[in-house]
Length: 239
Ligand SMILES: [Zn+2]
Image 1 (cartoon, rainbow, N blue to C red):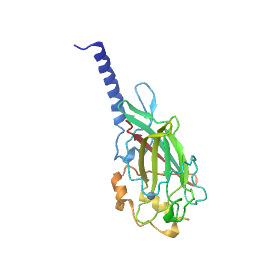
Image 2 (cartoon, rainbow, N blue to C red):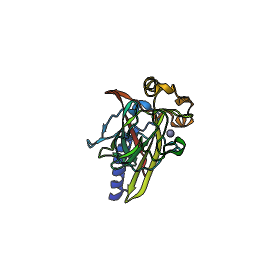
Image 3 (spheres, rainbow, N blue to C red):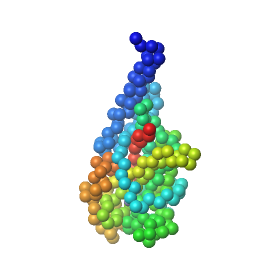
Image 4 (cartoon, rainbow, N blue to C red):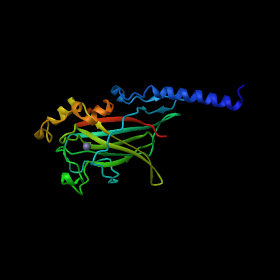
């Protein structure tokens, strides 16, 4: 016989599983076609962001925690304008919700393949192409930057890290990298200031780190004004 408490638990579980089912349809790590933001509606009519779990990838040697809260990270760097947006949601047993207040850090090399503030790039003390933004109530954060160039041994990529903090203490960290399709890369690198360096020596297909991503971190870009725009949706499994 079910007690009233059990009934409550059972109905709650049923309600939760409905939410999870609605959410899990979109949890398709390998389907790059789901990268287009398609906000869905829950049974209660509340819009939730797309909730797609993506693979973590190595931080690499060039992260510097500069604590630069800025949207425009270009400084003096020249290149194809890129508006880069992140839509961050939290995926747990009760469903997916927009994650507000998460710190999204971005860092990448310039058109010549140089990172700022890195000794081996002779750029110590420089801060270009680094910065963070906090996600808003919709889990959204946005950067103005340039399309990265390439350096030996890696496909073209942008590093990102998403952290949450509680009272100055880090409570969660997710680190990965974004990639771009060869057609986009070739179109951009055919122009100044990229073209003098020619094509990258490594393409996605030959990049060991890209190959760990299963293609789930390739960001489609659309033409926007004189440059490009891309919007990356990610669901974080925060316990
Ligand atoms: Zn890198």
